[in-house]
Length: 443
Ligand code: KE4
Figure 1 (spheres, rainbow, N blue to C red):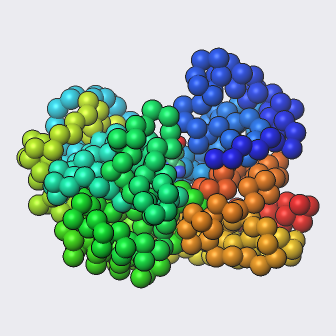
Figure 2 (spheres, helix red, strand yellow):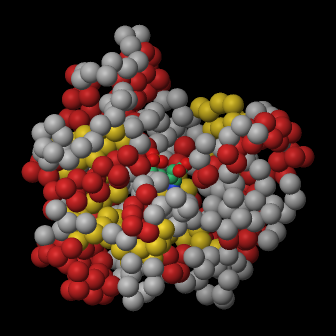
């Protein structure tokens, strides 16, 4: 992530309490945040501290209210504090917060997940998307008896050691650690390829197919900004893994229940062997899950021998929030309306950039969208990290702060997708487009 000094330190003069809170937090918490995604490293300046949220709005500790296009990085598809979700959490709270023992509520949520995602026959709950990815990788290796995991540049699956890996030299495609603390031995069994490049997969499977346990991908990418898969890329993944006895793991932590009730795989007609979930499945409380083919999942302890455990796995409060969220999405599917609003936002941003003479590639699926700022005279389609990483991140940073000044809270990085909720209205979209037009005209 490239750090950019803010044009000037806006937080200090416009958000005095956030500025003070950040100074205090930095003395106690590394970087003053409990996750680097919140640190504003990609846009410069200081993070804003928030006091409350309701519906599509966030209010910071200086009393300024923003239109929220992060939604806690995806979970808040129903908006903040949806009454059904709040009531479900309160009901669960009245009888206990954690038992360390099975509850019927977990089976209820499991039934909803299995019913929503056709490729999931059995599911295990954990406490985060990272834990889901880590467990799915271990299960794929345990089930196949193989070591190598294939992932794609620009895809993020949580802070799993074996997945904090960058592409090594093109020839070897061997993974190299991209964080201190990840050992070369750990990285060695991870191969990193370019997203949307089926030829690279063909070559790898030709040379090492017998070693590959699984191919892991974001079926629609949010973590390099929004990138959609080419049909031939997905076909290559499914065909090659079937032919060589490897598994496909779809990371739907971000896209699950977001792009359709059955996630990106439902939209794309893509059937993985395993799927990881997070964010929406917990309704904004800490919950992740991994699931898929019963014959694979039955290798997980205690049904099988692949170890995985968790004190707070299937926590009653998180299960209550997730259950209420999934029931609301099942009973009142918002996806057509989210797509309509997203289409208006996408068209508005495209028009605003064109009128300002700014080169930008905008990609969207449903309520996930990214406008990639680019340097050349013509917009270049962003199909993978090789093109995404050429974005004009300084220009994105200026856009981000201009939108903050107009009360619009976008993702604090060019390499993230924005999200909106069922609480966002046409008036909100109009306001956002007007703010973007003003911002871009002045850049
Ligand atoms: P968590 O461990 O953060 O619950 O999930 C990790 C994860 C796994 N897979 C995908 C596709 C993800 O997007 C994520 C987490 N996403 C980031 C934002 N891009 C969460 C923000 C953060 O790390 O603070």
